[in-house]
Image 1: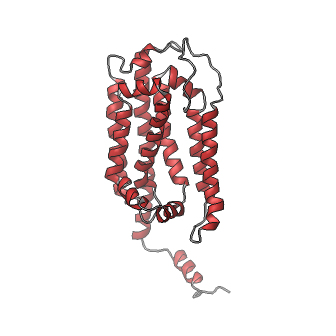
Image 2: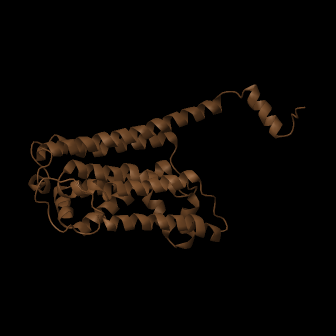
Image 3: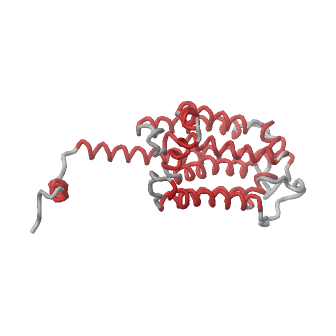
Length: 292
């Protein structure tokens, strides 16, 4: 992911597990910084809130998901052989790693950053605005998947690292209006979240459809790559586009479903009259219904 490959693949893929020390070190560094902030710096900040175990688990899962596609054979296959693995890698960054990392960062970490670094709140307020975040994310996805950009990234691996970084950061911005728990920059209402995610499920699907139904190979790099497992370059491209569309649809529509039912249950609780058990419990908590 960070360092250039020593040589271009010259034959079909021979399964082996490379260490990718750069990816291992990067993941360890990110996890260590997170743990330092939520344990050591938390004691320094007088108004720091608590860190839920769930948040730490989600953030760590996000780091592990990055390693799973950047430090394993998935990375080698995506960088040298198959576009389908390339698309899968990017889909994981955008639709798995980004929301997990964002959901794992406590609100008080962002609030401390906004207070201590001048101008960050004003910049963040612009970048995570739903329209701006939506536009920037889709622009990054579109530009980084143009044939010339993909070929350049695959031949210049320092640039490919920054492509991955841009996809991950812009995806975290895109997810902010849905997952934020920062009061100063709150998430959207449930109906707006569903509309936002619905639109997000459509835009990348257009690009994926173009790749899937193209009659010719779009990416010269993968056309020249050694064939693996008997998959032709065009079949690989069709699988890559289909996977990108399917993966995105499943994740985004899963979120839409969860948001809908949470909203529905919340509306139900607010509109129905309280049960006698709920009233009795509330009176007991207020000390007005002491049971003998």
